[in-house]
Image 1: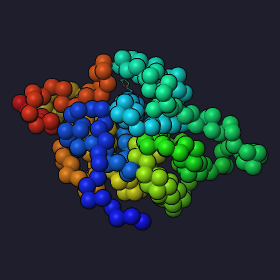
Image 2: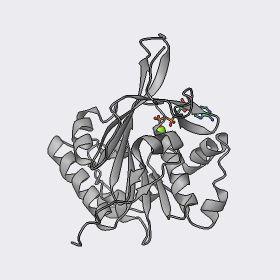
Image 3: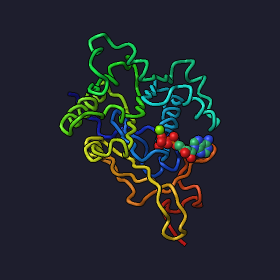
Image 4: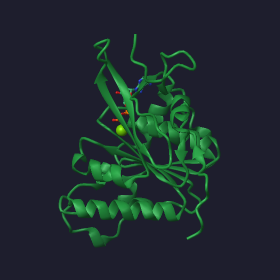
Length: 250
Ligand SMILES: Nc1ncnc2c1ncn2[C@@H]1O[C@H](COP(=O)(O)OP(=O)(O)O)[C@@H](O)[C@H]1O
Ligand SMILES: [Mg+2]
C-alpha cells in the first residue's frame, strides 16, 4: 500500500451550502447518504453525480430501484441537462435490473426470495477508469442477510472501491434497512442523514441534514436545514450570507 497523501482531495457536492459546511466529499472514500423515503436522497445523489461528471470525472449512477428514464425526468425537473454528459461518457446510468439479466444460469433455480444478493456484484461491473460511483440504493442488497453477513459484504465492497480509488456515494434507505443502519454508519468513511422534523420555534415541518460523521474532518454539530427547490437541494436558503447555517431563531 502506498503512503497516504497527507491531505485528501475533496469533491464538491454541487450544493454550495453543503460544501461550505463540510468542504466536499473525501476523494477515494465512501460516503453514506441515509434517510427515509422522500427525504431527498436521490436528489442529492443525482446532484453530486452531475457535479462530478461536469468536473470531468467519469461517473456511474447505478440505480437499483428506479429506471434511468425516471432519473432523467427528475434531473430535467431541476433544469439539469444531462445529455451532453451522457453523450461524451462522463456520466453513465446503469440499471441493476440490466445487470441481473446478464447473470449466468448458475443462479437460476434458486428462488429469488432465498437468494442472498452479493454486494460486490454491484461494483464488479464498473468499467476501468470509473472515478465516481453513486449507488442508489444499497437497500435492495440487504434482504436475507444477517448482521455478520451485512458487515462482511459491506466491508468487502468498500475495500474493492477503495482499491480502485473510486469515490462512492452510497444511498441507504434507513427504513428498509433499519437493522443495518448502525453498522453501515460505522463502516462508511462519512455519513449524512437526511431527516424531517418539526421546528420547535415555528412549529413548521422542515428538512434537516445531520452530518453524522466524516473521518478526518471537522463537521458541524448543528442540524443543517435544507430545501428542495426548483434547482435542486439547497442549504441555508433563508440565512443571509455569512450567517450560521443552523440558526433556529428568532
Ligand atoms: N422538481 C422538483 N422541485 C421541487 N421539489 C422536488 C422536485 N423533484 C422532487 N422534489 C422533492 O423531492 C422529493 C423526493 O426526493 P427523493 O430524492 O426522490 O427522495 P428519496 O430518494 O430520499 O426517497 C419529493 O418528495 C419532492 O418533495
Ligand atoms: Mg430515492
